[in-house]
Image (tube, rainbow, N blue to C red; front, side, top):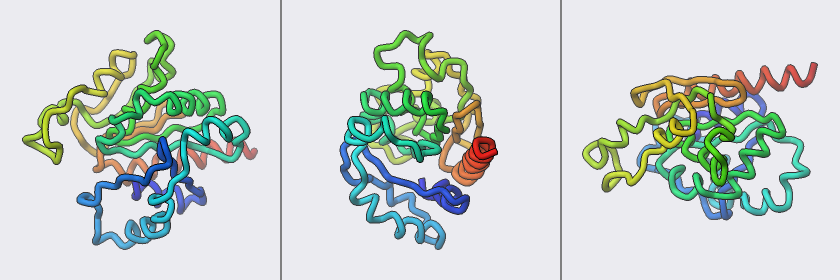
Length: 214
């Protein structure tokens, strides 16, 4: 989350932090790179927002229709993206709004799991990302839990298979540094991709913003 945020900030973009209910952001501090002073600094700068983020439900219900100053949505990774987001109606409305507004969608690692929300109540052929290519954390790596990784047991479902069943092509096989842009969607395969993902997403945003300015 924080490394891509550094790239967005350096490019001049301001960021607002949202959670589905306005509850504090749950950060996996065991993975925090404490030796990285830039990451430490941006964490401090946004700490108040992480602790008191905005409420996505309120945004969708009251502010989304009139919102004009957004360029992109960024969904960070972590297994938390698989918990609640894929079946959240507000996330579905947000995803459809990004398509209507021609906004960039950026998701890394397990973040693409949240894109499944757009499929709720829809036929597979109507899934907004049908026919897209993505990079994402591979199901094969998740199947190694709890032997590998920090999860206490086996996962009960595989988000990659769900995306593939909806017509998405996941191009990476390993939890590597691969990234990909397909139209307005930028994805990254794993935490190893954070830096390249931040660069690619920022470049895509700047290119898009410049085109809109000309």
